[in-house]
Length: 280
Image (cartoon, rainbow, N blue to C red):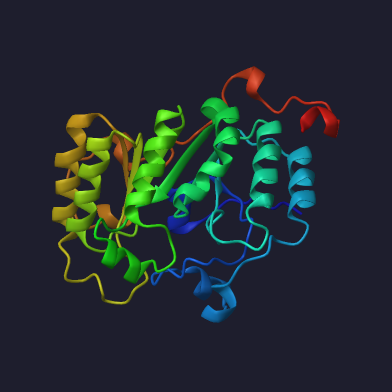
């Protein structure tokens, strides 16, 4: 059974491959799509999640059978750095295994400084990893309303700064954008702090008509005005581009795979001895 899978739809714009370690999360984000996707009630999803059954065994079987040269994202379902029942121990083991098999990885979390407990492992990946966070509001009250138990925006920004200063490639996900003014403030803040290498920018989706009053075309133009002079890596998601079809974008700004992490050097490929003591 392969636990690394190819996401589809809007998720595919984030990564060609993904791996979900937990099926559940403690952050209780109001816009979370996972309960609906998994056909779970909120009370069944928003609790301290256990690792998926036999996840480490299944992952190693997968990695022995397949070679991954394009990034695997952790994760679309459940946050790797929420308050999990195992205190993140399984995440560490997963990272160790992915690194041993030379798999390129992207980590996306709202866990803030919880991510730093694996800073040593992130460093071990070298240029085969990128670590990011979702940024929605600079206003802490609004952040607490929409993402009640996720880390505060100030902590997420500080975590990005620490990661960046430690030589880790970083990214920021501006999806969902709920209030464009808040997202633009956050983009300015990240530029001031010089803590983000790559930006992924989208909009609020799957929330009925709550976003219809926003001028998404203007938001895209404002993002271009802010980010293009910086030469930062930026990808604008299709859901946002649809509101400004006549706006000229570069091929990279429309290509979801332009800036993903890849394994390209022959010595980085999955060449290993089948000996656990040598891998870990």
